[in-house]
Image (cartoon, rainbow, N blue to C red):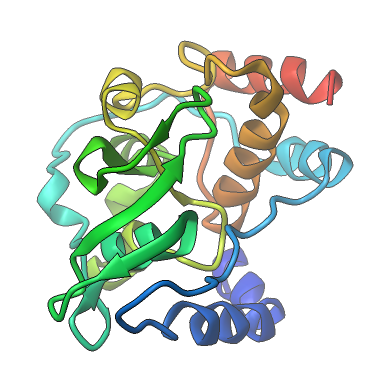
Length: 214
């Protein structure tokens, strides 16, 4: 039995809770489930110590190998679900498109009033996951990773900040808002640990440095 499936058994209650919270969508403003809180710095340091250190390999990567966004409830897909969850006073039309609301981007501290100014970031990028072990996954598992609402893997952020991040790991990119960096690395390690993904040596060194200051 792989570490991945063992972890899934241990976290099934949390997964069910996250699913219940994520599907309660309807037109009009509503209080939404909060972004999942990452594990503590101490737990993240413990997780990081167990991750395999391997050289990354981008061979064969294609973003389409990670199906997203998928339908979550009714007309709402994963992007729209995260916009509802992470926004304030979000209103949606019959197609679940966000017609109004506001979104605070924790990466840079900006607030936006148009959903078109917001991207949904894969905190651990899809290409990074591919490099770290997802190349061996089934399509179903890659889809689960790309649409994961239970772990702190998806969040609404400023679109051009997300685009500047691209597929970089914490060795070469971190949020400009320093107050969020500890949360970011804790979430990064949690996601990598849950999905049994590896780290490269520079990535691990960067994570150790940031976690030491959390």
